[in-house]
Amino acid sequence: MAFDTRFAEYFDFSEDDLIANRVGQISPRQKDRLGQEDTLESLDLGCALFILLAIGIIGLVICGLVFNIRVYLDTFLSALPFLLPIGLLLMGIILYVNHLGRRERRQKYPMPVSALRGEWSLEKVEGRSYDRHYVRIDGLRLKIPIMVYDILRGLAPQTPLVIYIESVWQKIVAMEFDDAEGIDS
Image (cartoon, rainbow, N blue to C red; front, side, top):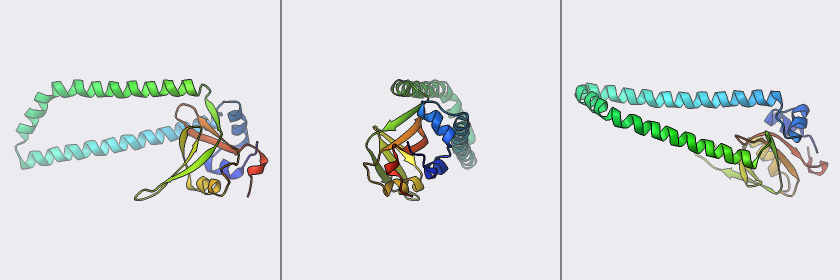
């Protein structure tokens, strides 16, 4: 296996982390980093939901000032016994589907870290404000930074590559060439 410092820099892993990944384990440092990323993603989602809630409340207040607020309040209170069970049912469905997805991923990737090998290809999805870059390997489409995309774009698709993913959330924790022939600095 060939350790590449460029991959180590972009995915923030060390040789010790890579040694743990090779035996299907996640290093404590990688576990902490993934926990921080999950916290940031949760905070982003929480902020987005808070903003949507604030916009909704502001909209209701404006409608209440323009129109009769008593009518809106009465309608909301009379609909509450129906909205609450529907909301709980939707939340239960979302949690159940999420549980099924996790169980399926655990069955496919039983180790904390799984090594993906095989033919790989690159994909670029153009967006309005920025592009997203992906690598496809072993049936998965994994998001990668543009710098890694540029490195891989300069390689032949036959270059043996090993991508280590955290099995539950399928995030890349490390990447390396399968042998020394793929290294071109």
